[in-house]
Length: 86
Image (cartoon, rainbow, N blue to C red; front, side, top):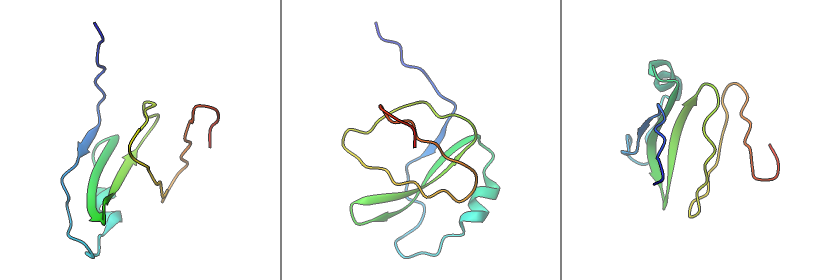
């Protein structure tokens, strides 16, 4: 039987703000108490914009039906792909 591993991630998929709302991202980051935090901020067409606060390594995973875009505000972010790291 396959075992599912649990990770200590705080993930909130609810949409926190309506479209075209000015979001104070630095305040949200400052209020974050989790090492790995993910909050959906708003919806844009058929996509969502999420805030991710990460410290340390995040487990490798993939999305077969979705694309991801990362905009790094502070620090370094290395993405491990199947054939290389970027």
